[in-house]
Length: 111
Image (cartoon, rainbow, N blue to C red; front, side):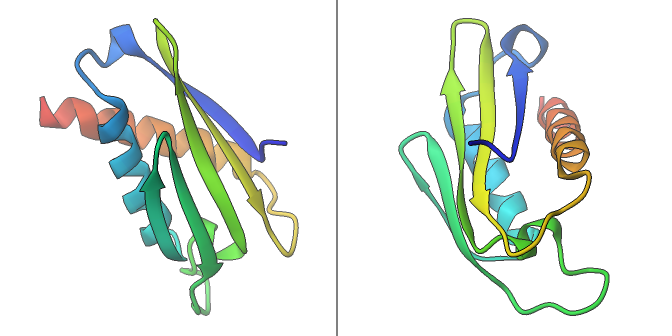
């Protein structure tokens, strides 16, 4: 069962590819505290929480392992995150939507 889901509407970000989205999410997962993250088919697999202390641990540091899956439809990229964590992370779905918005702005900045 997904921890969080979101989507990109293709018409709003024309020309973006599945590979670009996977690369951007992989980078964010690593920056967010995962020890390792790698792309496999249509997903980013990640595991191991990096040792970080304090407030700047990163949202993905709390997950022990997981995968971010992107499914392409004719009109959208559907993004879901399946992961295990040692404790409940309040408001993670809000963070995940904000991350999508950040990535969408970054893609637009590259155009």
